[in-house]
Image 1 (cartoon, rainbow, N blue to C red):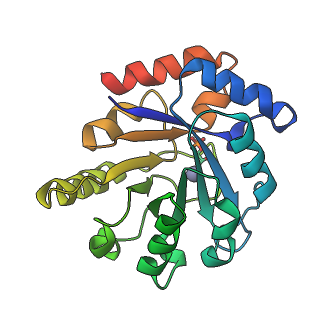
Image 2 (image 1 turned 30 degrees about the vertical axis):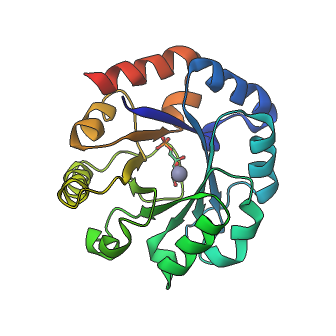
Length: 216
Ligand code: DX5
Ligand code: ZN
């Protein structure tokens, strides 16, 4: 069954603890923390302290999504996290980064921007825990899912199946009750959503609807 990750980018930061408790109760499977440096993407989100705070207060696995240029500089700060997601566009030596993350006892995930071809990750596909397929340009929540990304997810799924890998497909950007079934049909294992969850007055129902839609 598909898993749901709540991206706190759309949460009310004044009530972060409450917001996280709400999504825990609603039955999400992981917390996704978007970190931006103002260089890799044209936005700045939250700092390292927020990721550490989130890890401290939740029992759920925490995934830090690094939308930063200098991945190597920050990795050591995330030693308590469960997943570290880095962008293929930001690194020169992905095997080095992957090994460093694995040596910390953390699962590495490689993120890939919408227009970046899949062959950029072909040779690391078996070494990462998962691939985070960006279905919007990274930097902001509340954007529209790019329809042709379903083809990319399908293609990636085929690469994984053909090679008998165990790599998981995460999908991030514009996920809602309309796009969730498309992503799952194409091969997604985990759906990350911010506005579809935190943008709702009723988080519990929003997560339930998202899960149900993913089954349809
Ligand atoms: C975008 C972030 C996403 C974002 C998703 O740069 O990586 O995780 O928070 O937001 P929605 O679900 O609103 O598209
Ligand atoms: Zn993200």
